[in-house]
Structure formats: C-alpha cells, structure tokens
Length: 76
Image: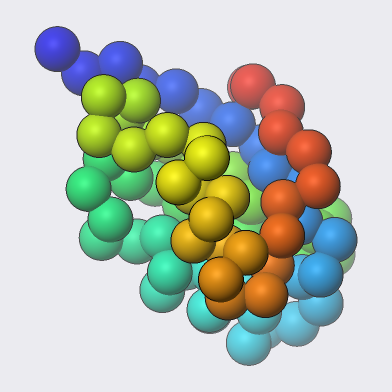
C-alpha cells in the first residue's frame, strides 16, 4: 500500500536555475518519488513521495551529496 507524503524542504543554498536543474535531476526517477518542484526565490523544494520506498533521511543525503543540505522540513 502506498503512503504518499508531501513535504516542503527549505534548502538555503538554492540560488539559480542550475541549482533547480541539479535538484530535479537528483530526485526525479528515484523509487518512491512521485513529484518534485523547486522554487529558487523561495529556496524550497516541494516533494511528493511514497514513504514505503524512500524516506526523508535518504532524500536529505541525496541533496547533501549534491551540495544542497536541507535546513528544515514541513509537512504540507
């Protein structure tokens, strides 16, 4: 059974279109990730995912590896 969760991640190091592209490429296509939207001016990532396939710790690790550490998370 899928347990879809939607969260808003605050990622202070997002500053440009290249940042957005990197984050999208990092998360899209990962098992469990259904949707990703990046807002550069707001420095946020809106993520919809299946908790049974990927968790926030894994998402945080993926983003951190690309140089975009997550500062905070808010369920929406």
